[in-house]
Length: 80
Image 1: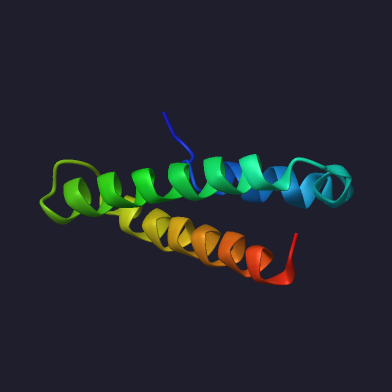
Image 2: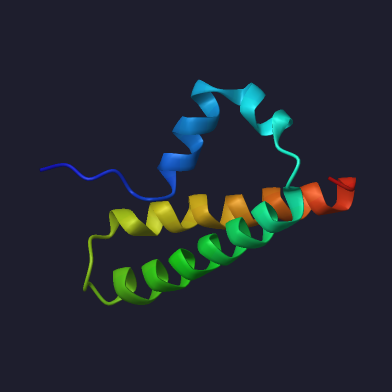
């Protein structure tokens, strides 16, 4: 059975409904949760994919997680 890496789920949701992101008025908690989740998944994926415990495809997913962190931090600089 195929499993979508976790980092792609938010990407697909935003691609389907980009106007939802602009309607959110709770940016600070969303940013904190987003950064925390992405950092946690990034650490887990790097730790276990590099030693072969989980599939190496999660290394690609860790790149997506790092991108999410960068994007959330950019939003903070914009004042959102």
